[in-house]
Image (cartoon, rainbow, N blue to C red):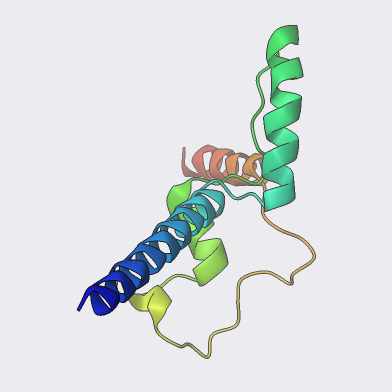
Length: 117
């Protein structure tokens, strides 16, 4: 009886530990997707950000287009909120070598506003 209880307790602790680790990894990578960064860019920005803050500079990620557009850059736009989980035959946006930037987005918005007036 005692042996079975210890095995169940051990299994529960291992399962809980792995579940917490995977949840933290999921949360971190969701943050990376929403901020449009790779892991390497995240650590570079984190450590160089202290020096920039000391110099009084403000850092803006050039590839951060906003949470919704960043999500669509990775998973593609969908008709429903859960469409990103479903398989799709649509090709991903872009060519894989060049990605839209924040300045291009603002330039396009500005030119659209100028032509509308």
